Image (tube, rainbow over all chains, first blue to last red; front, side, top):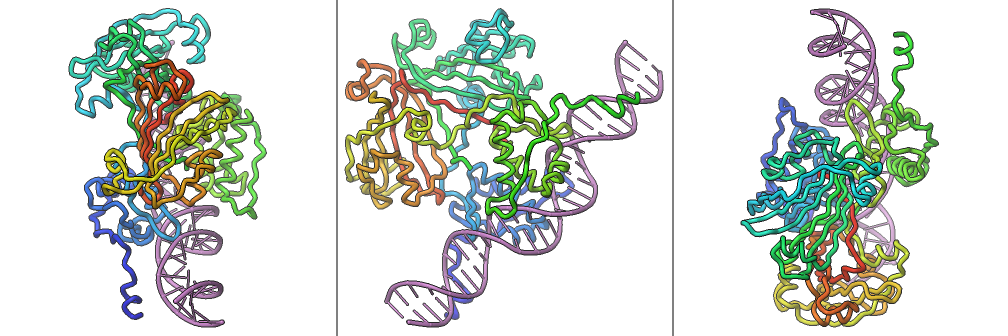
Length: 260
Length: 260
DNA sequence: GAAGTCCTTATGTCCGGACATTGCGTTGAC
DNA sequence: GTCAACGCAATGTCCGGACATAAGGACTTC
């Protein structure tokens, strides 16, 4: 009785006393500083999966922060799927191995991050009237000028995907040189277009003779297809694309969280 | 000068005075009540895309709420992708047509929601030792007992997908009858398993003779494939599945938001 | 007429506190 | 020994205020 009173079933994983501190002089928000420190602690293994984070009140006191600020930091990581909160219990690190959730990502940047040294060959880069399929997808008036770009994306010299994209001509210029040295999304971002959301459709079909020839696949091979309409933060549609991937060399990998 | 002072360029879209009110006696949180009312207002067209929401302070005063509560409601909709906030400007409804973001969804429920009346034929439902591929994916000890379920998912009598799933045997029972009357996820939820996240991999390949036969596709047809490991809110892996979809009748449709 | 500066506006950040509600262990009764 | 009632601990909700910061327009100046 006594021992169970003063050493009551210690939480299975007591958090090692982390070195946490915030810099109030920094312009980066306090809650963000804290979130980043917790995130790296999880990645480095200082916070092991399943370990409890310790209650918010005490954590706030230890850092000299208020509880709302600490909660905001924790909420950021909960939304990322790194932490789980349960009322009456506490906040703990999820067991799941880290894997980034699916984001509105760029193929080029994904490949580069994987160390695959992507390269791009621009096959077409012209302006002209938009096909009906494109004006419908982008919600543009008919007979609108669009920039049409056809690209072949390669890794280590091997074709990986065939990308066709359509953008409203008045949005920005797409110099072929820039398209070959970075991805389309990076180029748009540099020109002040901040992406917000995209509607995607992923499917499969047998490739046409032209597609298989470009991708170096045998005729009629199964290909992975993706159609996408992207919108910026003002809600304007800014890009329509139809992509075809070599199924033998590429899959979509991503993580999903249950809707909160 | 005078007129521009007292009637300064009215915001392009002034929000129609919405009928908003919260019920403080209700057990449902105030911020959630407000979020739901705003959401339905957007869906009904009472709040048109691009319209400003009016500043938080005034909105809070009008509802008799505090600003943090109003902000929490708005944040919910921002996370859903329905609203966009810009500092110094205001909060406005996105132009993008509504389309639900990708969630950890059930094929059965997606089809049912689309009015496609899905049915299921259970081809196998046995227990046995887990293949190495499954123990690796689920992080289970070798020679562990798992429940193996093979199902054919149909809509309007036509085959749509061939689903193979593996679950730790000690987790729950999978009566064939229940599997045919609802989806696997609904069954797990009824047994107290709350899903939290999943790691997915989507690809394509030509179908085997057996697969094409089951799905009613010509031999060697291109199929859409999906592999998934699901985790519950404690981080335990609870399900491993390999699914094959008829590419001619099914695509993954979803919406992505930029990572915040 | 064009450019820079000020000012308004609205969200972003942060604080300190209060009470409600849930999960779970402990205690106590039967 | 089993079960119900109590109480503790932690997150969930909500309030009222304060200052910082960015975006955009209006004004002034050149």
